Length: 223
Ligand SMILES: *Cc1c(COP(=O)(O)O)cnc(C)c1O
Image 1 (cartoon, rainbow, N blue to C red):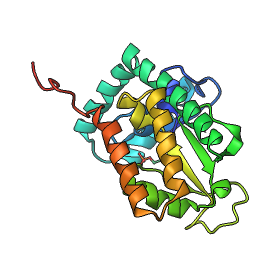
Image 2: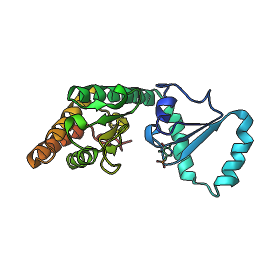
Image 3: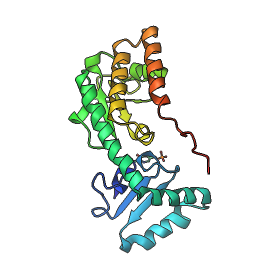
């Protein structure tokens, strides 16, 4: 049994190795790096197909959400496209870039770096907790999760780390130059999280950056 919920998009794009050949069953959510509707998928070896079908229906599921099935069907096709592969390739490049930049600013990256879409930064060298950093970054428009680090001396509600995912900024079109700017903003926030003027300046910088990457570029809805 393998779970690839976090990395399914990277797996689909061939950016990291696939668990499929090694596990009898592989399950995944379809959100996260797969970038689809909130749902899931399960793969299995042919010999288990009947068992899995029965367990799914009527075992686990009573009715169907056809709109979600349609969204997933679209996503499976999209996951095979060059565009999706390019985005997933950039997700890993962006994560590596952020890990390197934060290291330069004195953050310690747990496990020394990353090979996928996310990283966990140990904040103790910056003298700020995960809770405090998450809240200060929220105030400037950067979303991260506080996260325990191995042997964390802080409580689970406080933590000494944050976990940072690079999928959505990569989908949005951000590349290494923008990731370096985000790292600089994050460092400025960590250096003075209680300084309102500092947070206001960081927020303005973050807004100016993301304004260059509109969610729906001009002409998106033209025929
Ligand atoms: C994210 C995740 C889930 C939940 O998936 P959602 O689509 O967010 O509800 C379940 N299992 C694992 C291992 C996950 O990483």
